[in-house]
Image: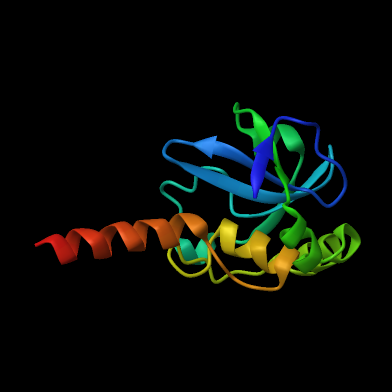
Length: 135
C-alpha cells in the first residue's frame, strides 16, 4: 500500500501522522470518518476507546491527511468501498482497544481486507526480535 495526498473519496482508507505513528480511518465524507479512537489517545484508558465517527477536520487533528493507493494484488483482495463503509459503520460503538492486538490500523484492515493486521506493530515486533537475536 502506498500513500498519496489526493483528496479521499467514499470508502478510502485515510491516515494522519501522530508523533511517531499513524492514525487510520475509513473516509465516508467530509462529515464522517470512522476510526477506532482519536488520533492521540494519550491519557485515555484503553477500555474507554471506542470506534467513533468524526468530521475530517477532527480526524486531521492539524496534520495532513493521506489516502491509501492500493497495489493491483491489494485491489483484488479488498472489499468494495461500499462494503468497507458498511462494515466500519456497523462497528461504531465497539470497544476492545488494545495497542498491540486491536488498534486503529487493525480496525481499518479488517474493514478493507477482512483481516486484523497492523504493519506498524509487526515491524516493531520484528525489530525487537532482531535485537534479541543479536544479544
